[in-house]
Image (tube, rainbow over the protein chains, first blue to last red):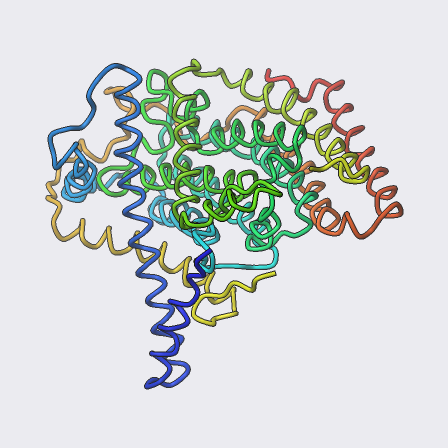
Length: 358
Length: 126
């Protein structure tokens, strides 16, 4: 496996050879920030294209195909279009909270984005409580959504944000518990450590039955957490115009849109990290030759591949299941997913204690 | 375990601040660019709430369904209990039977709480 920290170490040595230590750190921090910004926006633009193409395929359409080869530049054109749209100044809003809400939503997704491991040595934040930090910061986003709905001074946005808040906090419980189930298996919360622990076999195989149940629950809860698919009732168009971001115009709306797509990537990324080994190639214990061949595929490709496949499944949900009502949604979480999850955690503990893991 | 650090910066708090500032910078920059290139025209009707065409009646920042509060409170309880389980989950394999017994007791109380809420009808959306 390639260790990409060699590249960053090289840059570090090059910079520190002629700069003072504090200046080196500053330059490196700026470098990390610019890189993060670039990857974040390029990925968001790609995801918008990706979803539109998949939607089109499900509905027997072509999707975007005019701007650039295969329509690849469509979302770039859309970004410039949205930048040139007027930012409408509203009369009765709470101006401070209205301006604050997009910051919270973007910062939450940026922080959780920075935790994801992209490859061997290619990870920005590596706390020893990494995955817990990720769960914690991703819940800042719900604050942004609640603020957006409340400060707009509009009945549609208020109802939309309340629904969204109830849904997101409820499903966060399921996410937390399924993450907990996998931490029991990993024995560490560090993101790097979790990937390392899967070097012989991915957790979904290692933990077999409870890991698979946790994986299914994580995907369902993750879909709800990103307000997508059958759980997109916070923005049910026919009832609430556009939900919590009805009053936002131009690029102000664009931030919510951007964060929504990035959250899709983050949910898929965390699922691939916890269950499918992150950037770790597919290994089977005992098959040395096979494992060696798999190692030739770079870790970043593995990670992105897993994330894209899982996002495809989440997008697929949207075109297969009809939208749930709020009572059905809360029933699904509190009466089905939560008890199953608690039972699953106990099952996982039993399996680990008895040594039945693969 | 491989120690992963980027550029030899081991202070993860600093990196988290950098990531948060990047997020804030993205919003700020995009708003600044949009402010430069987007058109702007004044019309008193534009400032009205986007509801249904006729003027808004009553206060919009009003009371809402109490059910949302109920679920928020339930969430708070269960989430704090989940947070308690995290440190145990990390050390589960080392702590052995003693840790397992303690946490089984705690877990039992958690499940009892859920059953109580269920029987009381707190999980129904009314």
